[in-house]
Image (cartoon, rainbow, N blue to C red):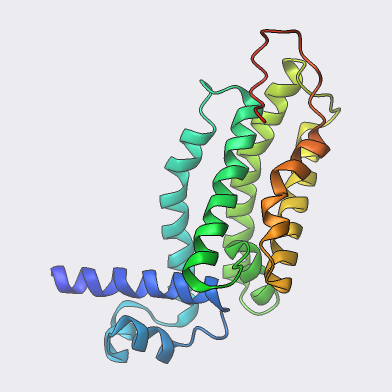
Length: 209
């Protein structure tokens, strides 16, 4: 039973890595099985298709991601600092992957979603669902920052979407150009969009240079 479970988890892990490092098309069943050192028969014992495997990788990733987001966006943390921590976490992950594989990987959700948007409706829907969940975390922090007078924005949802679109665009460009520099400037760009208001001395804005 342990081997059965381990082989499935291994396939999920390898599929996640291959899809992010290269593409959904490149991560063939043969390539996944070869890298996972698992026979193709075992693959089809766990999954009916590569699409089902990819769908489960997304669900697994989201289950692992949510506790980290809950911590980053803890209400005990000032709202602007939550946003800052969120993007710093993303930058650190991009740097880690760059050092590991030798090139910029970009956002795995956006890369996958843009590749399969017209081919795999179930995958596209799951990617959109996860992106929407992440957007809600960002929106809640922006709304609280506005209510506290830390930023000015008439529409917290729209501002969150603008910031998310900007970040995803930066990561996509960095992946295309294989240049980590735009990623390293991401936090500065986010602060330029938010334009935090000057606060009286001693006010905990949550923004640190």
